[in-house]
Image (tube, rainbow, N blue to C red):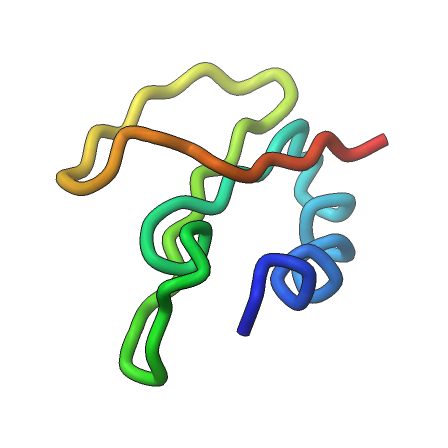
Length: 67
């Protein structure tokens, strides 16, 4: 699964749950994912303020803003 596949698959859910921004990071964003890799996503929701910290890469290489 590449970042374009993720964008297409996630767009309906982003609209439904009022996601302002969705970032892909980790091996998928670096185009280094294997069949055993997970997909790391960080979502920013409109009207909700929360911080979730998790180990791993802090460099986000792909982001989309939803209309």
